[in-house]
Image (tube, rainbow, N blue to C red; front, top):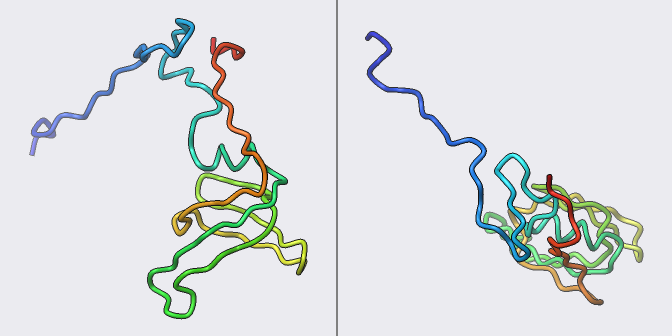
Length: 118
């Protein structure tokens, strides 16, 4: 073939997104640092005691499991928790996470008016 059968895809650049309250414009190159993703919410609550409910569909032994402990770190695909009672630490994959129950108020911040996105 001559290499012209399929063209390479093109993507728009510097597209202005719909503005949040306060008429702040930001483009795809300057999105807010804190977005409403589970890992960001867990990071905002680092150090808090939680129960994380997990399901492992391919395991008969560990079909459903509850991890009780403290949020140490959170990443895009993982959660690190420690259990103060046993001293054990857990590296858990987010793909199996169902939900998290907090024992205190959840920190969740999306105040665009106080952040500079330029």
